[in-house]
Image (cartoon, rainbow, N blue to C red; front, side, top):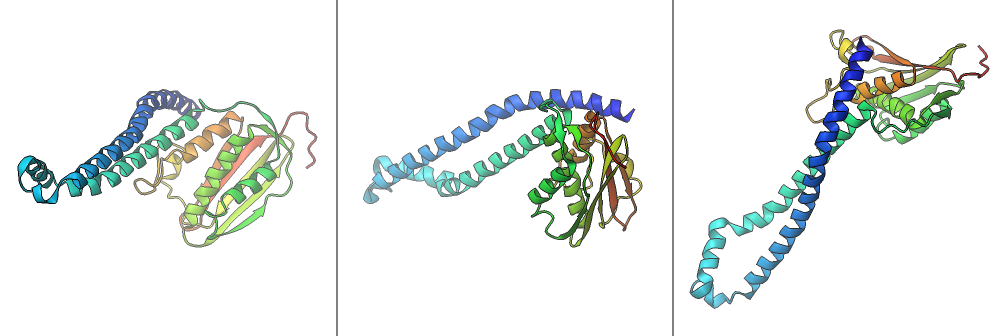
Length: 265
């Protein structure tokens, strides 16, 4: 039921992302053009101000211009318009990130070119990429050598990145993030555990729900774990989670072993 629900939401997310993306594109383009236009207009205004004779500023044909400039507070407009446009661009960028997260969750942009991949190498690469985010953690990578799996490497890397980021954020100040692995004849598993604050029992059933997050407003889209869950399911695998408040959390990813590969126990 959970898989069917996530699949349905995935189709909905793909449609919503597509519909938002179109107007978002021209709004973003228009904002950049508007910034260029405003810079041009402000340069013209500055040139006019420099051309106004000081002696005629309070009378004659320039009096109305000076009065209007004071009435509309041109100085404030010139100071405020730059930051205002920058904030608008930042807001559009934020919306674009959310739309991309929706597209990732739906899988519409996935490049379905599966190939053999080394999970151990993927974990090491992800740890290197997240070195800054994991700097406050004692990362213990005990994954060892695992059988290769058939997957889309970029998607699998996104799964591990999401889980490691989650672990780093759960630790907050200082703690341990431990990575272990194992396998049997049919599957390999990767466990990512942290010594963070843990997940409340009432929250645990919802952590893979799209848009569900316990982070402060503006700190997350609530799609990281949903996307990870969806990508693992696409690879015919599953994610299990165990947690206890005050004693951290443990996420375990199970993936099928590459077909036809000899696996030693």
